[in-house]
Length: 213
Image (cartoon, rainbow, N blue to C red; front, side):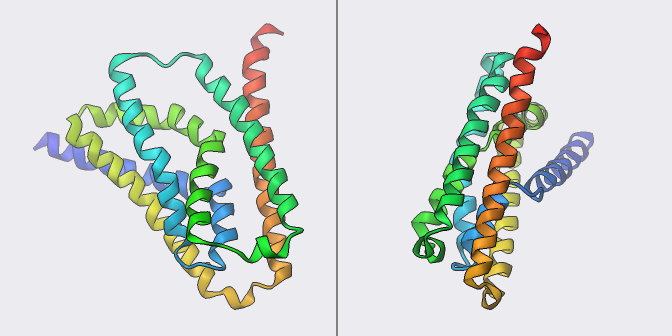
């Protein structure tokens, strides 16, 4: 009975922590806003692209924790590389706003790729899993493979529900989305990518050189 109670409490904590991370404004939210005005399923597709990286990565961490220890240098390398990639994507987004055809286009492939590429380049995603996800997986592993698998499904479901709902709401209000609005959204997306990228790169750089000063 105590095991069942502990397991349910753990699942509730997973849902709350996952939602708190998903609902924070960031690159994924920005790209969802960009794509959703032209496709109501953009959020679903973006979440699917996100899951193509996240789901295997969760199982990799689960296996890694049972076999190896995470080196201290890993978060620093992720922050440096991910930060640079995010800043690059921000600049590319800013350049894309000059092309009206690119602004108005949003295919299934684009939305899926946006979720995948944004996740891959998002240093915050990798650092979140190292800082927050690892303790959650360790806790889930104490309930066995079934506990971990349930954790993985709940976490991914939070992404799916949130981004699908956000995209659907934006799509329904698309009559308010003029070309000027698209321009503003792309500038916002660019600022989010560059800002987060600079922050992650700077934090990682300080972690690397700070102890030497």
